[in-house]
Length: 318
Image 1 (tube, rainbow, N blue to C red):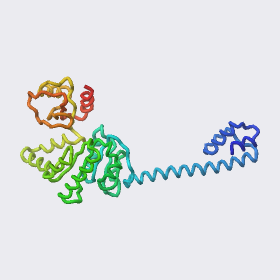
Image 2 (cartoon, rainbow, N blue to C red):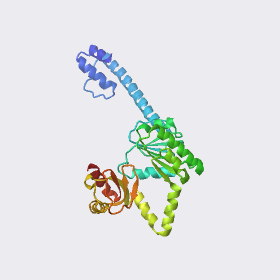
Image 3 (cartoon, one colour):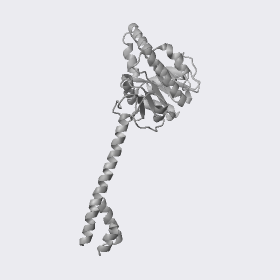
Image 4 (cartoon, rainbow, N blue to C red):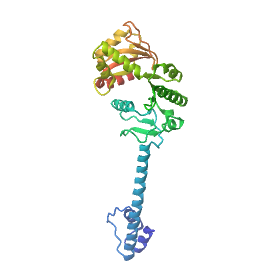
């Protein structure tokens, strides 16, 4: 209407120029290259300015409302997500916080989406790539976290419960996860090692018995002073050397362990401490020198973080 009105009342403004003037005025840009000179034209201009300001205000308020609403829902764990090959962490405790921070120290994981499922009030960490789903581990919360496309699921114990109930809840969560997506790699935290067979029957891929690990480390440190510091250095991504799993180069198939061990040390400053038969098969620690490598073997090595990028890339390309 404004375009036609200006075109009719302003003798020196063409229809195209009138359309341009309307767009510029409604968007409150106001270049000033075209200006109405008649009284009616100026009246139309005033009306357009008021309408433009109103439209801009409504648009800005609507956009702000959408963004604020999304932020609130993110913080309260009310949203659903459609990530792929992401990590899901079930339950929140101080160990979950450490796990997330350690994962973020790995360059490959720094921007990978991590979805936390926990029955807490707010998202517990400020992390751009951490997403929160509020509630107990169930079909509904796992579907909101898009478990069907997740690569790894970490199931932690609920510290509010006693040890037996904590492990029972972990096993139930494992059964629920495995019933939805058997292909995701499930890592489970237990307190009591007597529940390990039950957890294996629930199809957990990897089981960490925290009390057993800490007890074993303390006993080793008592007999071998300083060993706990070496283990902490290897396990942390924050400093020093770390553990990595890399594929065996095709050129090394059929060679003896000792020959590959020497090459890895000379080329990458990496030490082979174990071999895994297949990507998720049995692990052989400190293999004998005459062990012959098979095509599907993986190397578990200790290497400095600055060497690991080239190590992973080169061996993945072979």
